[in-house]
Image (cartoon, rainbow, N blue to C red):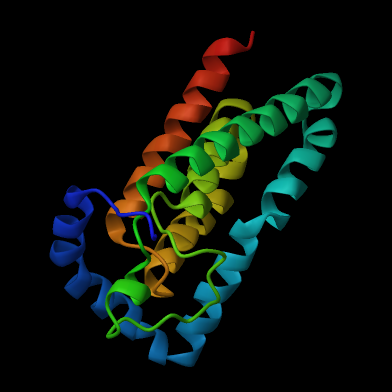
Length: 179
């Protein structure tokens, strides 16, 4: 028996599907689709691993501690994300609505919250605390990662908003817990 999403998601799905369909519809433009796919791939892991690995170089002796902080924060965020995602079971927009095209293979059938957006916002917040001079180049990437999730038909806008809120909260908790 398939797990059932809470009723609140059924209502949100109906409110959001039209806007998600419109945003995903822009993917017919090849350059835009290419950019969304690139952003999505960057948000998978390579960008974040590079950011963690660069901390000792960017921060000197403190860099190893910061790299460890980023790693532990990401691991806690993944555990929380998986717990939420497997309990709430909101199906992806392209599964619920056949009019929304999926432009990238999904890892699973559930969309809430957006893990890509969670990590993007989490790392952006951590970077703001440690290396704010990187923000002008990181913020556009983070925004593109968030947009890519809806534009590729993989998430609803509320999935992305929830992922951003969780990522921000995880980063703030991490910063509050470290000296």
